Length: 203
Image (cartoon, rainbow, N blue to C red; front, side, top):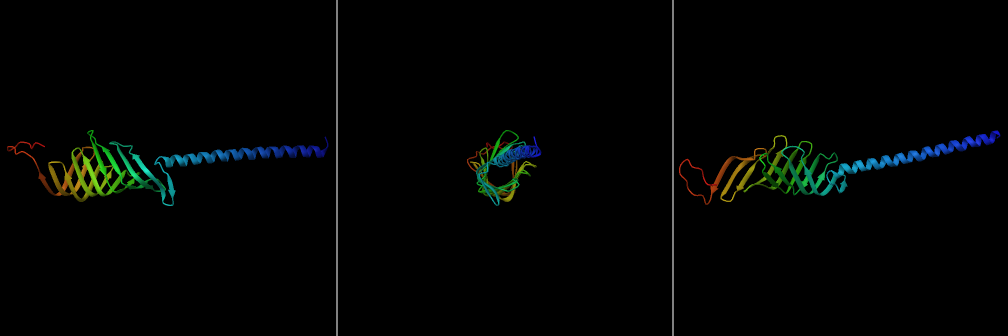
C-alpha cells in the first residue's frame, strides 16, 4: 500500500469517527432538551398551567392543597401565577379549612391572592365564611398558615338562623375552631324561650 492509499485510509477513518461523534452529540442534545422540557412542564403541571404570558402562567380551574396541618384546600375559577410560581392571583376562590377538632370551615370570595411560600391567603370582595350553621360575611379576610388564624379588621355580620349579629373585626382559629367578633358587637335573638337565672339558653 503506497503513501497516498495510507493517507486516504486514515483520512476516511478520521471522518468516520468525527461523524460518529457528531451524531452522538446530537442525540445527547436531543435527550437533554426533552428532559429539560419535561422538567419545565412538570413544574407548570403542579399548578395545572394552560397559558403562558409575559406576566406568568394563566390557568383555569386552579387547585392547591397545603402540606401542613391542619390541611386546607383551595380552588379558583382562574388564576395568574407569577414567574417564580410563589404568588398567585385568584378569581372566585373557594377555600376549605379542616379544623383541629374535625370540623370544616368554608370560605368564598370574589378575588384573592395566594402566597405559596409564606402560606398566606387573602380574600377580598363579598367574603363569606360558613362554619356549621353559622355564616359570616365581610369585605376581606386574611389567613396565615403560620398562626392558623383567619382575621379581618373590617365590619362583619353573622347569620345563624335564630341569631343575627354585627360587629367589627373577626378572628377565627382554625385549630381550635373558634370565632371571635372583636368590637361594636350587636346581636339579636329570635324564637328563644326564656329560661331561669343561671340556666343556659337553648341554642
